[in-house]
Image (cartoon, helix red, strand yellow):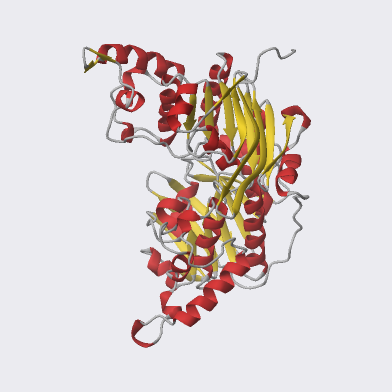
Length: 505
């Protein structure tokens, strides 16, 4: 159908520098009302800065912004909000101790006679909760009692209550299950049907084909172009983002002889797991895939000593082993990269060097516990170079890094102690496609060097991309095992209980 309406937003010739660093060299972005417009690019490509300019958090050095055909000035977040620009971030920006109603209306309470009109707010919150698929009866429930997915739904309701005409969704699906993503998509479709323009930022490229109408690709501070979603494939988008060809094939390899690095025999965890049997050999990458709540994450916790199994046996290097705490696991040569990088993986305001060296201080210590600073610098710089961490110095705080580079720092800390078994939980969650490829290559290189690797992930493309074998966990049990020739249909069918298209290997 021919487009007759003016674009909701038209950004032209936008640039932005921070000192001598050019975050955006030249960017254009045109978003139509009632559409879902995906914005993709590697970390550092400039998309976050572009969105901050639209949201009024930053001001462009050059360029123009037009809203519904009229050029406007967006010099503050207040200006953006007045235009109807609302942003929902990956991690909900809510007050956990306040109710849903209080969170939705905080800062813009409905008042009458100088007092909050709770009756009017109750009427509006009921309609909003119904629109996002939640029960109106939850209106006075504290947000802290909700799931992460529900909190994100509340963030969207808050944006709608603010009369959003442009809704920016920044990595909205990174922490959601497949079922929760479907709920998110249904909300987005309702909003676009009412004329709201949605800018959708995601590193999960496959989902763009379920929700987006158009895709703008950014690279090195520039917008390459905007494409109808039907003209692209996942691989094409990835190659546009990284400026090259992304390889997907993995070849079979011969594993070293000798005892398995890890064996779990009939392991159970009360309320989560039953009868888990798995083996990981030296040089092998075993992927564990399961939907959120399947019990897959608990397997990693048991191996690393964060949780104690209620039944079964763990063998490590052929010997019966009990890791009562993570320190036991580390002493035996087992390290783990946690799923929640920000909360459990890094000291955000400490330097890269501190975050790496804290992983094995004994290795860097002189007599009586004094750190050998020269040795520390040498080892830290070697790991930074080995992992391709992009930073001007090991003294840079981790909080100033992109998600992909911060994740490399977390991995570097685990490598400091030269582990025999590396456990990775959601190793590329929230990182861009280029950083994901680099991390995958690193994992493969470690396995080629003899490290046993156990990867627990809810990223379907990831588990297929890097695993030599894939174990699918459903309802606390391993329901299927596949070689590296499995398909997405095979894995999803086994994970959802819909059966498989071929017999498990």
